Image 1 (cartoon, rainbow, N blue to C red):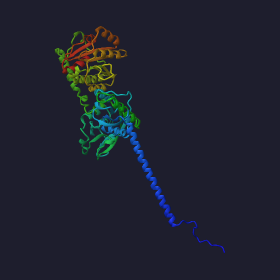
Image 2 (cartoon, rainbow, N blue to C red):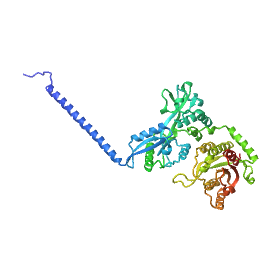
Image 3 (cartoon, one colour):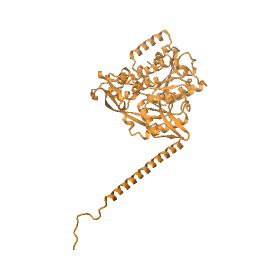
Image 4 (cartoon, rainbow, N blue to C red):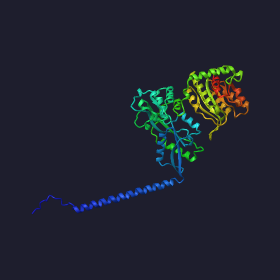
Length: 491
């Protein structure tokens, strides 16, 4: 008889066999997991051992200074997380307060930053430092605000903590340098805690640093920071300097922004946003007029502001002018009045349509520097930059006056327009053959350069410099410097 189908699968596994297979699968999975975990641990151990072998020289602390602590700390953390090794050292970056102590300086790449480095006696280790970090800046307040409704009088500037954000916000909101500088001077805060948000005040800030409870409004600008690796000094050794260059390389390679994200801002505004900057720049013009009135009276009475020789007392007219300032140790008692005099005179000349520039000189102060003069600002219509730059100078060294005068005459003697060199000096420490010096300067100057001199203090006069001067004025006391500078500038 034929067999009938029962409806059941003849190949069905027994329940006992299925249970056995499940148990075996679980055991296999456990073994695989155990072997994998053991392998990872072995790899970690091998990595740690390799790391220890890489750092045979030990650990090296890398000091990093930053104009903005938030930006600096972000770069320090990122570099530290990469476990850097330089010259067999495990590098440990850390933030420090003083540029003088640092192997790297993180700050916007501006003229004011370069002047800050020079004032600290530091020099970049590379000629083309690269951008390394950026952050959006704007204002923070209790309520949202439209940019078209925001006026600069409502903004407060925490310049000690947010210098770059303060400069950029002031420039964007004010719309002109004069109002921006005035706001940065009059509306600065010691810290963000001083903001009165309930009164409708807004805080200039980076987006990453907005205080809790406030709302951020961008102003369409980024603060872009450059990592400046610095040459070694007494506090930074060669290994730290090399690590600083590696820090800068790492930061620039991981930077995904653009220098163009930071709008152009004048040096005047950058300087006003410094914790110590701004006040003197916005001094009332009346003070200049009063000083000039006093100079005229002093000259008539034969005082310190009087010409030393009637032969060179002919009236001068304003010209394009290069200020050449002695910043040697001898100028130290007079340096602030000299800065003020040059700043005010530069602005007045600029107001009359004249171009101005600025050099300073003493003697070489840093390793590798072989000349005593520094060509800070080329003669140009930008009088504001001269007024800013001169206020950054410190004093040191001896006055290598002749070298500086000859270099300045050579630089401007080949120009098309006449340039007056206003020399503000305490004396000369590099005197040599007078005739050789005079001939060299006259040959370089031709008919395009005129030299006038302010002799500051009680130092001995350099007769060869006097012979080259179209006008010389003594300023034996500090209060006579401004009137003297203006006289020899044709004002």
